[in-house]
View (cartoon, rainbow, N blue to C red):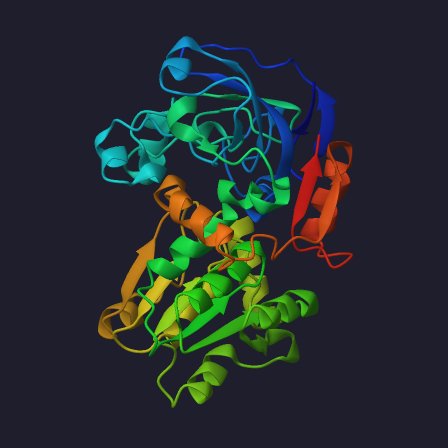
Length: 392
């Protein structure tokens, strides 16, 4: 089959790889009908995530049709012909964390749990296409995908309706939704969202749906800002050289937004050329592993006793973390990989009722074979690219 493979930093190739097979009774094989390039895939492309190996199949936002089912998965209600979305994380459904709905930290699905414990202090769930750190599982930017723990992992969806209506239940829609929900938004709140990429757009959309008084979107890419405006946000264009923190204070009676969402993460750009250069030098020298510009700004901008929600991906160590501002302002910080299946039933209902536009970020639909080219288009923000769907 054809698949997009990581062959080194900034080297993504479409290659022929062996078809997946059932390896465990809990497995299923999915014929992928749509798959996506995620912003967090760019972190792999750019070399920010350790433990990638040459030939790793990428991708964690697929959907498709079940074509083969292991005996245990079939006994639990999964059948050939089922149409499913595959969330980016595998879940066992039985461990203490799954029982609590904390699916992104499932204690059974990461077959390299000891590696995750050394990196993070405890195990996290197995993820598709995201390095040995999360289990070294092949990803879904491919014609077929093996899904371990299939019956508990996949989301069954209606037989009818375009893939584009459901594909983002795999990751970015529940990620944006969780970012807003865990901010505890009320009708009195101003919500500032750093980053108007796909997750940021869904966080903005979710904040509006949840009844925020105002939503302010921060970015420097015109087409992203325009789409944020269309979702109901006021926009703050940092490409104009505006001081984001000062501007947010001016827009909120001097105190800052009650709720702040960092939807940027590991590869943020600095507010000045000098600061960004310092961040890049520190990452190059391994003094830190990421550029936490958005997180710093969100903490500094947030109103005292407010909440900072962080769906943006971070992987290691960050310098210049404003611990003093966090502590002295009494901020609540909420973070985490998304507990996808905690939200999917509710989001399916909201999609069906027309509350949520699941197609909000889509700009490009391309064949899988153009994947390497589209990685670069997405990374470089060319051709108005916000979100790419690939069709095997």
